[in-house]
Structure formats: C-alpha cells, structure tokens
Amino acid sequence: MDKLLFRRILMIALSVLAVVYAAYLLISTNFKMYPTENAVQTTVTDKIYSNGFIIRDENMIQNNTSGVLSYTVHDGDEVKAGGEIAKSYANDDDAASQSKISALQEQLSDLQTLQKTSTAGNIGIDTINNNINNNIISQIRSINDGDLANIDNVTNNLLYSINQRQIYTGKATNFNDRISELQAEIATLEGKTGKSTGNITTEKSGCFLSHCDGYENALDYNNLDRLTLSDLDNVKQTKVSGNIAGKVVTGLKWYVACKVTADEATRLSLWDGSATVLFSDASSESIPATIKRIYQESKDSDALLILECDYMNSDLAQARQEPIEIGLGSYTGFENQQKGYS
Image (cartoon, rainbow, N blue to C red; front, side, top):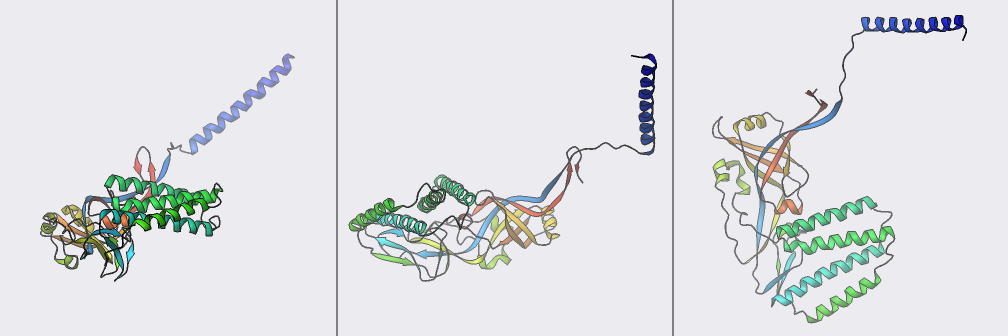
C-alpha cells in the first residue's frame, strides 16, 4: 500500500476516535448516569389469620317414619317448604336399590339431554375440561372426607362432563346403546325393589344437607349482638338424635365468628367494613364479607370478630370450624427485587 494513502487512512481513523471520545466527555459532564434495576408489578393483601366458627340459620328435619332412608335430593340442593327430601323403605336392600335407581335415572336423563342438545354452540372445550378437573377434585375430596352421601352426585357430574366432551370432540355421536342398557337396568331394579313405606318433607325452604354435626344450636343465630368471646371459646358439640334426617340452611346471610388480638381489633375498627374470607378446606377462593361486629371487654384484651357473608355453595354449607384468612384490602405497586415496594 502507498505510504501516503496509509497515512491518510490512519489520520481519518484517529480523528473519528477523537470525535467519539470528545462526545463521550461532553455527555458524561452534562448528564448524571443512574444505575437501573428491574421492577415487577405486584399486588399484596393486608391479612389477618384466625380460626373461624361458622354460624348459620339451621333447621333440623325430624324423621317420623320407620325403616331405612333413601334420599331423593342431594346435599347442597335447594328445597322448597313442603318438598320431599327422602323416602323410607322396609329394609337396607330396598333403600340401597332405590338409591341405585335414582342414580341410574340421573345418568339416563343426562345422556338423553346431551343427545338432544348441540354442545358446540353453547360451551367451549376449555370450560368442559375445567368442569372435568373440578369434578375430579370434588370426588377426591368427598372420598377423603368420607362424604358417602355426596359421592354419587359428584360421580354423576363427572360422567356428564366426560360424555359432554365425547360429543364435543366427535368421539361419540350418540349414546343409544348406553341409554338402552340403563333403561333395562332400571326396569330390573324396580321389579325387585319394595314399595316405599313413607316419606319425609321439610317445613322450610333453603339448602338441604343430610349430615348434622351437633353444632346446629351451639350459638344463637338470632342473638349474635349478645355473643361474647367466652361463648365462642366454650362452644359445645351435642349428640345428634337418631331421628334426625338432615337439616335445611335458610336465609341468605351466614356468619363467621373468630378471635383476633387487640392490635388486630384496632386495625379492623379503622377499616371501612368490607373484607374477604378464605377458608382452608371449604373453598379455594376468597369470598366477600362484611365486618358485622367487633367486641372487646377492654382495649387491651382479645376481641370477638363477627363477619357477615352471603355467598354459599355445598362445600361452605357443610363447613363448621376452619382456619381462615381475612383480607382487608389489596395494594398494587412496583416491587424492586432488591429493595422492596415503591
């Protein structure tokens, strides 16, 4: 390469470097550089933890019949005043056969409904899959809790969702063979099952539950304004009479009573009254609640907190005493992963 050309290229390169360096010095002199860190948007909830005792307006149903009961409604079903909740039969075999007939009739009705209804336009595959998963979880929970009265209902719901998926995905176009099998099985059982010897009805409308736990009258639902922390601490379970066929939970409102510390009572008294409650076993999601009453004998003593709720499902209807998480409000901000919230 010509020495003169090389020298010119070198001079140009050095000049460019000089300009870049001068620009860097100018920028660094006039602008202060700040270090940056990642921030993540995060929501936190102010929480209080306690053990809750659930108080409902519960009315036990007397069984004035003789024989063995076969329920005609499921736990969690809404019943009307004067409506039938069970039939009685002369022996265990007849009662078991009638329960089997009822379960098969539900399967038959579900299959006939699926064949008459086009699923594709009404419900999506994601919803069907979620229903299957939820029914499997409910079935496992019923088995673990020994809730034999609810297993048939949960199993029927699971079968319905699975069959619904079969229709949606095109793996089944009809259930004619299964429908014929169910009709034949029902006819056979009906031919061998004795007639009902009586029936049981409910005097009140509400949510039916076949199981009574002995705490139905432990705390007075209609006298919560006089309830004290001592009453809650000394609540007693009573033996359930053998002639009780179940109970009906009436009214939309039900309550959760629990103990809180003096500091927690102060926080609650300054709050606007709205809250949420998460039950450890009965519900996977928080439900809305309202602070009904905070009672303290002195400003330094533990307090009785009563929360009012109006959301109900079959799991909550059967819950009684559970660890609870009370949410008092959520706050959203940006969390610096090294320094905390801003």
